[in-house]
Length: 163
Image 1: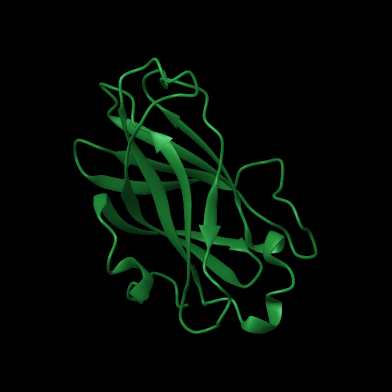
Image 2: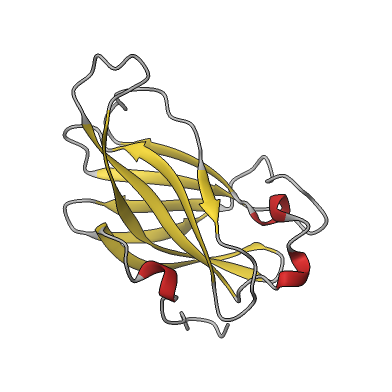
């Protein structure tokens, strides 16, 4: 991928309902692949683990790895999952964990991934995603973030701040 050039969204994103859309290149967080954040999809509404909170809007971070991961790498899915920590500018209604999925490795221009789902707390303006890279030959993300993806919900924009 040439610097500043972000490829078109892959077909996996066509049917998604987004809360905020953006196309932000977060750099090479995996050896040979850039992490391109595509937006926050609508994951419905949910309550915390105690189920005594009112339902809260849930979102997932949609992204693509560029170029797509070839099928020959399908034996090592763990080597293609960056670490993500989610936070907001107001207290989260419950402790969050990191779940998600990644599409089958088929090569091509992009490989789609989705992480979450996470709550958007009442009154939040900024959501932050600390992204932890995976180094060559490693199976787990580094313990230092590569940077932070910051999403401004009111302005409907996102930007990348490298560490």
